[in-house]
Image 1 (cartoon, rainbow, N blue to C red):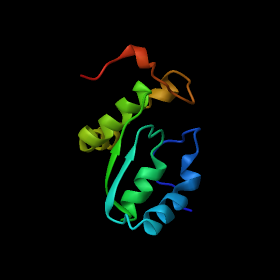
Image 2 (cartoon, rainbow, N blue to C red):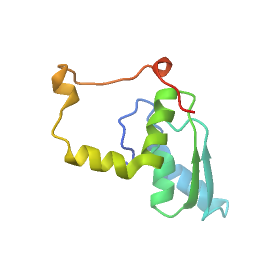
Image 3 (cartoon, one colour):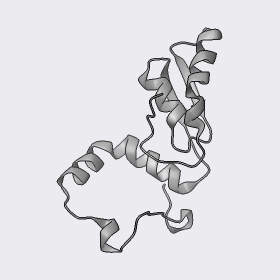
Length: 110
């Protein structure tokens, strides 16, 4: 099974993305909209979209860090890709980190 999430997320809903595809087929929903209130790593939503099962996804998450990540990726993805591609700066090794997290309280999206 292909994993489509750019995140390694502990929820693990991606394991059941094939089940959601089967639900779309069984209920004649191919080409419809998939709405995910707690997207997490986004495996299910991305799988449905990439495989053409859903033509549109609407995602959200209560966790502000995840919301900010998906917002950045969807609305500033090209800038993010270019910045990462052109940058030789390694934030993780600078601080001796192997993982990075941002507190949901430390920023807001307006």
